Amino acid sequence: MSDADSSVARERVIESMEQSAEVYGLSRSSGRIYGVLYFAAEPLSIPELVDETGYAKSTVSNVTRTLSRVGLIHRKSSAGGGRRVRFEAERDVWFILQDVFQQYIQREVQTTLRTIRRAEEQAPPDAREQEHIQNLRETYEDLEEIVQLASDYSAAELREALEAYEQ
Image 1 (cartoon, rainbow, N blue to C red):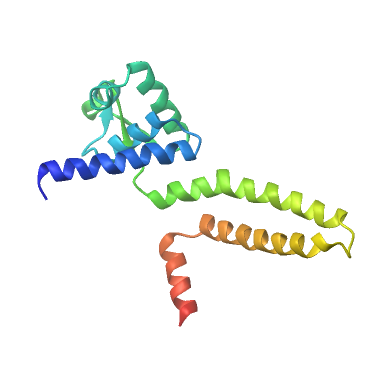
Image 2: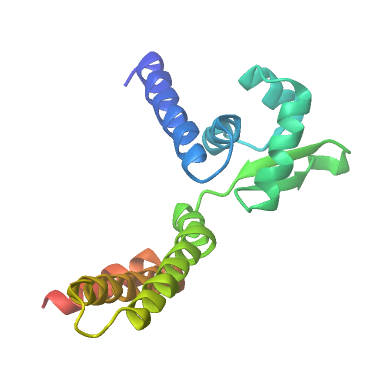
């Protein structure tokens, strides 16, 4: 693969990270900065990120603060005890996905499940909708269990359990 091909592939992944960031309630600039750090050979400083992304220093500063807070990037001290802070991406993507499961999906599933259970209690037992509500509750209970498993176990542990189950 040539350097040009590699650069195009890298840019495609970073653009995908920009789109994904929006899905999780972050800005596109958060996705781009995370992507740049993900592919960086070493931790980068705010001025280096400004050069890499073309964003204003204030934008990079705000985004790195947000990404640090949510655990997507980590602050590193400069080599030799320098004062310049550098940032590196969390590269364990499963860790990131587990965090998303716990913060967003699990909360949404639990909220929806509470609403479904209330509706199930309020609907008359012979109501036509009762069966639909019950099926929906069962599906959300299964989803809640799946999200919990994905949050508690590593990808390797889940894969191992599925392979053992298939045998």
